[in-house]
Structures are given as C-alpha cells and as structure tokens.
Amino acid sequence: MQTVLSRTLRILTPAVLGLLAFSVTPLTSEELPHTGAQVVIWVPDNWSQQGNEDSLMIMDPDQEVFVTFAHMGDYDLTRALELLEEELAGFIEEARSDDQGRRGQLNGMDVFQMSGSGKIKGSEVRLWIRILETPNRHAFLAVGVVPVSRIERHGETVRRILDAIRPL
Image (cartoon, rainbow, N blue to C red; front, side, top):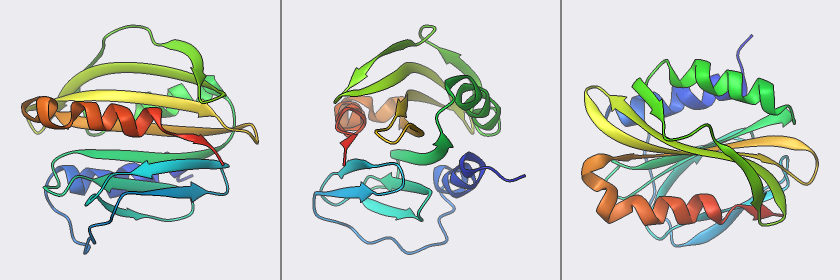
C-alpha cells in the first residue's frame, strides 16, 4: 500500500537530486491552508511549491533547500515515527539524530520534534523534523532539509517555516 509519506518522498527525492521535471512558480510570501489537517503553512517570498491535497513541497529559489509536508491521517505518533524512519532511509544516507526527539507544544498543538543530519548523494545535510497532532487529531509531518553549505543562508528560514505551522 502506498502511503502519503511515500508519495511525498517520491516527489521530494528527484528534487533533491536536481532532477526536477515540473515547472515551479516563484511565490510571494503567503500562508497556505491545509483543510484536511486543519493547519496553515507559511511560504517565504520567491519559494516554489508543488503538491496535492495530502502533501506539499516548498523549495528556495535556487532549489537547494526544501521543506516537505505530509498529512498522515489519524494521529499515531509511533506509526508516524516508523514511517518516517523507513522513508528517510530511502534517500538519506548515514542518517543520525542529534537527540531522541522531544515532545512539546507548537502554536497550541502537540508536537514531536527532532533534528539530525545525514547525506544525500554524498553531500552533508541538516534535517529538522516535526510531527504535529493537528486540531482534528491527525498527524502532520514536516521535514526541512538544508545542505550544510547553505545552513548560514537558509537554516533560520527553514526553522521559521517549521515553527510557523499553526492551526487553521
């Protein structure tokens, strides 16, 4: 059975590898509502987007940095973590977490968050991961990926995008 996360990462992997086959349109800064998950996502100026009702990927203008979002249905943190681990293993080499993750609150929603690093095609990347329990008790996954060479330029923006997810 193909999961939402699998579909998201199938969109994501070619973008990471620079094999984008779709046209992307730069946007002005905006907030995008996700009615299924009942959340709002902030998209910075000039970032492009691609997605459908279940998943979304936004990329910086140079298409080097991305954040992907996936609506995972009914909230089950254990299952969401299992799916995350399985899917990341498909394109992140030598993945390591900075910690065991932590639970907390993000804009009034329960969240499990962690950070880590790994490699994509031999290049070091930083990862920021959020799994939120949305107002309708669904799981919503957000993963930010920044090449280490771009941390200074984009790291704070990716963290702002992740921290700006809020209830609809």
